[in-house]
Structure formats: C-alpha cells, structure tokens
Image (tube, rainbow, N blue to C red; front, side):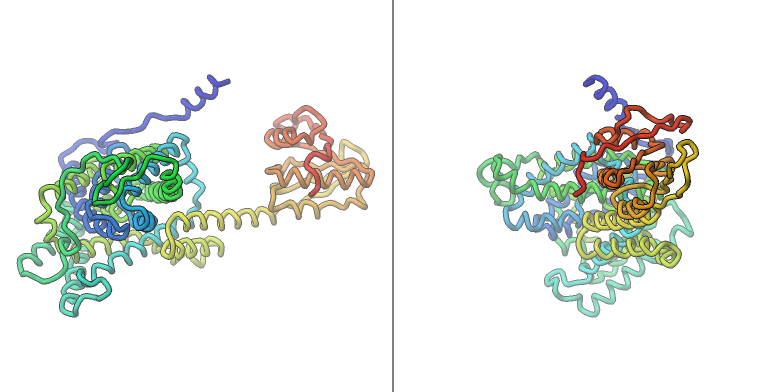
Amino acid sequence: MKRAALANFAKNISPPNLSIMQDEGWSVPRIRTELLSGLTVALALVPEAVAFAFVAGVHPLVGLYAAFLIGLVTAVFGGRPGMISGATGALAVVMVALVAEHGVEYLFATVVLMGILQVVAGVMQWGKFIRLVPHPVMLGFVNGLAIVIFLAQLTQFKDPDDTSMWLESSKMISMLGLVGLTMLIIWGLPKITNVIPAPLAGIGVVALIVIGFGIDVPTVGDMASIKGNFPSFHNPFGEGAGLYGTPLAPFNLETLQIILPYAVILAAIGLIESLLTLNLVGEITGKRGGASQECIAQGGANILTGFFGGMGGCAMIGQSMINVKSGGRTRIAGIVAALFLLLFIVAASPLIERIPLAALVGVMFMVVIGTFAWNSIKIMTKVPFTDAFVIVLVTVVTVATDLAIAVVVGVIVSALAYAWNNARRIHAIERESVTDKGAKVYEIQGPLFFGSTDGFVELFDIENDPESVIVDFKYSRVVDQSALQVIEAVAGKYEAAGKKLTLRHLSRDCHQLLTKAGHLMVDSQDDPEYGIAVDYSVRTGILGNH
C-alpha cells in the first residue's frame, strides 16, 4: 500500500525544466535582447526595492539584497522564465508591524519560515489550486495591481526631505516633463527600431539630459544610498545583537509563536501573487509555466534571503512586464538583472544614484498602461453581472487592502455565484415507471449539493405519491454531505408515510459516496452505461434529520 502511494506520488512529479534558453535557441540577437532587458529591469528594481524597504521600516540594503537574491534564485530555478521576483509592496505592508514591534532579526527569521512553508506548498503541489481562480478575479487582480503601481509612483513627486509636501512648482514641472519624455520615447522608439529596449533608451536619454543640463530633479540618490557590500551569511537566530543594532531572535517556541502568523500570511500572499503573475506572463508569452516548481523556487529563495539579511519577496508584476515588453523570454534576463543589481550595490552606486527618478517613474507609468486590462471596461455590460461585480470588487479590495484578501474574496464570491446558479437548475421530470408497474419515477435534473437541497425536497409530493417511488439520478450527481442528509430526510418522510423510496442510476462516484455513508442497502453498482438498472433502498437513521 505504501509502495503504491509512493509510486503514484513519484509519477505525478515531473522533473523541473531548468533549461537556460528554453525553446528560444541560442543566437546573438537573442542574447543581446536578454542582456539589455536584464539591465532595464535592474535599473527599475533599484527605486522599488528601496521604497519597499522604507515601507517595511528596514534599511534600504535589506530590500536591495532581497531583490538580488530572490531575483537570482527564481530566475535560475523558477517555473516561468521571463518572470522577475524581488522585494514587493504587498509583503512590505505586512512586515512593518513585525519590524516595529520586534526588530529586523525577527523579520529575517520570519522570511526563513515563510520560505519553508512555500517549499512545502510546492512539494505538495498545492500550486495547482491557482487554476480555481476565475478569469474575472484575474482581471481584477491585474487592474488592482496596476492602480497600486501607479499610486506607488506618486511618492516620487514629493519632496525627499519632507514626504508630506509635494515638489515645488519648478521641480514639479521639470519632473512631469521628463516623465512625459520618457513615456514618449518608450511609446515611439519601437516604431523605429527594436535594437535597444525602449524603457532602457528612455532611462538613458532622460538621464543624459538631466546630467548634461544640470536639471534639478530628484534622483535615486535622494531616496537613499545604495552603496553596500556583497551580502554575507547571517544567522538571525541566537542571543545578543544582530544587524543594524537589533537583538537576534531566540531559537525557541516563543519566537515561533511570534513569527508563525506572519510567515503564513507572507507565504500565502507571496505564492498567490507569484502564481497569478506566472499565469499572466504565460498568457503574454504564449508559454506554460510550472506552478509547483515556482512555489519551490520562491520558497528556496526566501530561505536563502532570510539567512543573508534580505526582507523576502515574490514575483513583481511591474518588473515582469518591463522584462516581457523589452523582449526577455529566457532565464538569462532574470539572471542578468540580479547580477546587474549586485553590481550597482557593490561598485556602481555613484553612477546609479545620479539617475533621475522621473525616468524610472515614466517607465513604471508605461507599465501601468500596459498592465491594466482596458478591455475589462468594455466587456462590463456584455458579461454576467456577477462577473462584472467580481472584477470591480477584486480591483477595489486589492487597492484598499492586499492581494491575498482580494483574491480570496473574489474566489468566494465567484464560488457562491456558481453555487447559486447551479442550485436553481435542479428540477425533476415526473413519469410512471416502465419496469415497475404502479411506481412513480422522479428523473432528477441538475446536481444535488448544499445549495440545491431545499429545491430537491420541494420536488416530491409525498402525500399523493404511490407506495413505490423511484428517484432516477441518471442526469444528476450526489455531491456532498448535505445531499446525503437530504436524501435520508426524504426517504424518512416516505418511510413514515408507509411508502418505499429507491434510488436508480447512481454513477460510480455517487455510489461510493452513499456506500461510505452507509445509506445503500444493496451492495452492487450500476452498469456504467446504464445497461442494467439497479435499485437501491435507502437506510435511514444514519446522519439524522437535524
């Protein structure tokens, strides 16, 4: 038995595809595209990682190290080449309370546990449940993330020394003009040439203009210095002081009680955002990705990050869109982006800190325009009301709270709508039995489950029915415990009236469900093609009628 279970488990595990180029093929143009795309992504990662570090209340290098380590590991081992991962705002807003109360070392410990949970989810192949997310929820997710990315860029229009104040008028005009110029380059350059990724060209041209003419606008260096060393191993567990002067997290049960709730939430948000981004990138590139492989890669990356002083992270939809739109299709772009980011930290910080934020904001604004599902506005009046409502609901909840809550709410609402629609479908065709003279047959149409039990009871006329009643399930299915309960309840009512209720044409799954509950008094099965009809008497008093 154990051998069979292990064999079945092994059969379901497919070897991960770690090919560098996938099916793109090696060529000079392809490698050039991947390298330039990786450089573009690395430049866009810098302000995002720093900003999310500030949101979480940690040092900027904590965000940058996370972007490097997670980006590198997921690029090498992830399930979707072309997808970019790093420190994200969705996780940062959860981390801030933990950091404020317990310090950054507890955050590192939480990230390690978060990674372990994600690896477990990957090994157990829980990533496949992302298929249960309906398309309206996906549209709401995309729209919500686009709005969140847009709102996050607005902070760049505020005074670096006083974030409660907007930039003064002259700087604001310069900032808006440079943002517009960047967007214009990104929009227009592909119509002329694709030799250089348009976002990279936009950043380069605007940076040269700002530096050459000495235009006074905020730069990356105004946010924070990104200068640092190569990340080194650091154990967050123990006694005494850790990094940045905060105490280490003791390796005991008390620490586990503190970090476990945060780790579960972070793991769930990270996997949901990563798997939804994986599906989105797959739709754009026309290629499938490995959900379980991505879960394991995300988990392994977070474990490593927690032991190297990083804040943890997941897939980044904005940077992934930049990569895909720039032509990145293989693992090379993600690897190059991570290595360029490390180069910026250890060697090129003075140069990178001179890049104007306006250029990077312009890139992200184009990402927002490209990410938002504009067709969802057009189809609002053409799709069912429930689907339109779910799109708007998930969008609003994503902006107001976080992605995980939004997706869960969207799935629940979609599931309830589906259940309600199916509950209304159940009905019965009444006729006299051909095989049993004098008996009445109820041919049930539609599934019998928790939502349709009330409608099922109303189908029967117990008082006026003959002594023998047959319930035919050829066009129906018995789905859950509520269905078992209502079958027993109806059989009990016929029994109390001195009449007999039998079941006919049970499918194999229905038969197994009823047999397990102990309802069937005949130990046999129908012919799968319904060539032989077997009638099942119902044993009452099994579940009770409460």
